[in-house]
Image 1 (cartoon, rainbow, N blue to C red):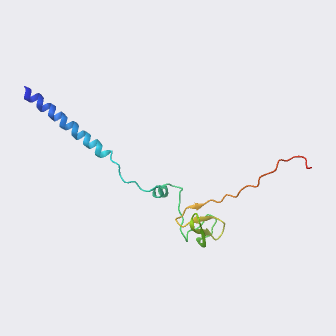
Image 2: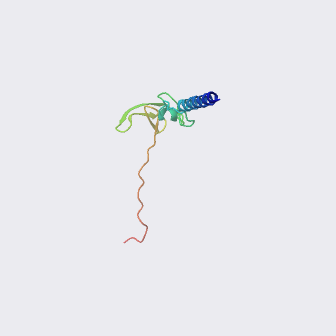
Image 3: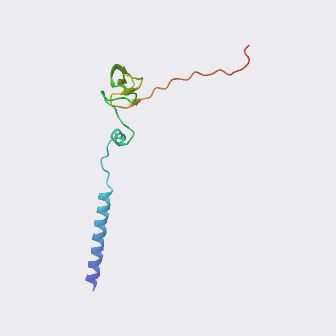
Length: 106
């Protein structure tokens, strides 16, 4: 009778060990695509390339300008929009003019 109990305990231990190995295998870290690739897969995060059409109807092409921050710049022939060479949109924000407090002039 003791042999049967020992055999059952051994089989349960082996099954538990196999279960641990399987869960460890399924939860292992795997290589992920870079954030740029993941962003490109997101709808609405469209990238552009030279020769593409802009939303204004112009053509996107090389401008010959380079930026210290972004490198070579792509631009539109019909508007002032700009992109980096890897297709990311450059958003230009102009510094607003500070209004002086309105009051009686001296």
